[in-house]
Image (spheres, rainbow, N blue to C red):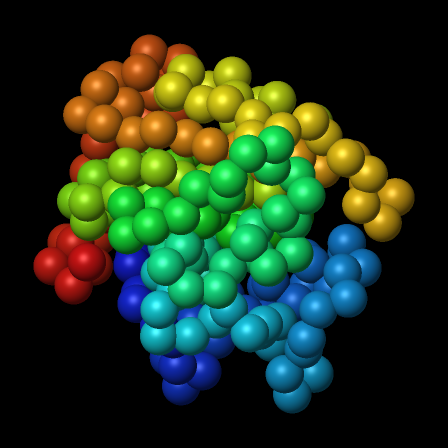
Length: 203
């Protein structure tokens, strides 16, 4: 199941294991130049009370995979660092959230990473629609953006892919409505009822 946290505490074992896995993926494996706290946790200036964390939990109650959603009524990555990826205005407002920090640990294996990614997407759609969010944005590699745009939902690039520190990246927009679950189910992405009951009550 997918657990939802609004904000975080390193005293929470689930959150702590998420930030450890983020450090391993984004810093150790991908070499990102991002802050590391206490040599163990990847945390940046966007982590905080306003962030929504969608966390897949393994059999031991630890982090298996995760995704972070940021409100666009405050500072967010697309607006602060990647505005040049948008041909027009940057989508923002109370109905828009930004997808960031998709963490899929290598230990899961390729097929399990795909399966848990799809569960995270399903939970993100349900959580967004429940919260009155109708637009999701994000910045990813150009290759992964093509995968996202082809998943079946109403999606569009916000501008052409551009080079950033040796990688080709691009921004995207996803428009959500009551039809989105069915559109994603038709391509094998969406599964209903992926949010853990306690998390759903807190959402």
